[in-house]
Length: 300
Image 1: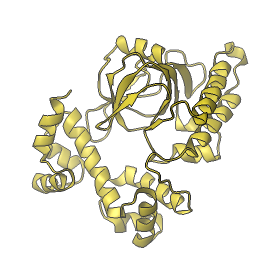
Image 2: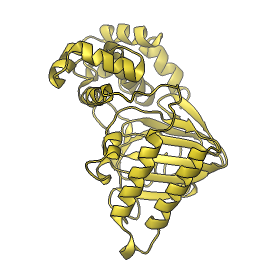
Image 3: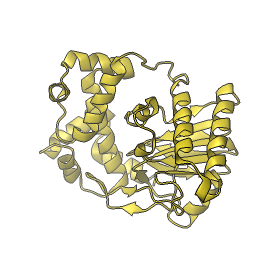
């Protein structure tokens, strides 16, 4: 979840989905803000409360009371006490049912963290669970305490707030989250994680121009076999599946959340012929682009 009083930027490459830049009403600490979730909802009500959008920064939310629903890339997450949401730059989200959920909500840019650090690595990874249900576990208590310390430092008189303390506390929060059990029981902690992170970074830059695993291997200085091992360790899927899944996700976003013609979306994603795009999309989603658009735009 993210602040609705953030500055709106022009649509990103490949679509008309609203993108929000980091621009909080009170820029006390450049690149960082921490507020109550209830404050966020009040800001939202002054603009488009249910609009689909994506952001260019990270948001972390720990729900401490109440309940609600939040949708990220076609998955709706029920939120209650102990829910932890980490939404990364570029992900598409919408407030489905804010309900009565309240808690601690922080926003930060990738550049805010101290460099170099393990936490710096984490914010540059292009994957990770959106939602964890911590319940009343010990991990919930630790995170609530750390976020409380962040809030206490941030709320000090402006001239006494330490950006360095905020950076170090935030790094501690992220490192603690990184060692939580993965929701699916997996989680790659081997050296192949670095390979996968580099690959995903390149994929974000190039998914609309190439879907060939060999191209990514050549650009990164690896073999296709190395990329396949890294992808299998991180996702359980081969590299070609990861590439195609990323293209299919962007296609789904643009079909559901923009009015661009299918042929235009196809060109954005590197398909010279709409028919080839249609075959690709149907193979990976099980429905045609037109059927997917009709089903999901009816839900907006």
